[in-house]
Image (cartoon, rainbow, N blue to C red; front, side, top):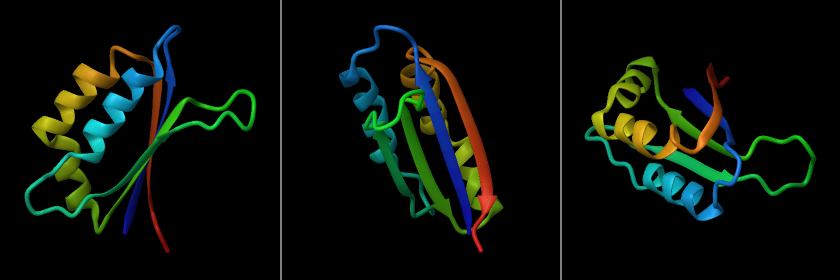
Amino acid sequence: MIRNVVVGRLKDDVAPAEVETALQALRELRIDGLDLDLKAGLDLGLREGNAHYVLTLDLPDERSYRIYDADDEHNRIRRELFAPISASIERIQFRLP
């Protein structure tokens, strides 16, 4: 099992509704042949300096991750919804035990 984690920081003056629209687009993403177990949300502000949003996605293997990563709609969401509002985006994929 591969876990994909994405953590983002927003540009100044981005409204929470804009972030939620982008996160919801990912929650609703469907890719033929993949069962996307995607969780996404805004930071609760419990600790100063945290990132602003996160998403996690568990996929069965590297092949599935590569299909997800190359998907046209996924990349449209990245490009059109996340890129304009994000100051930075960090990603990591790791194998679950």
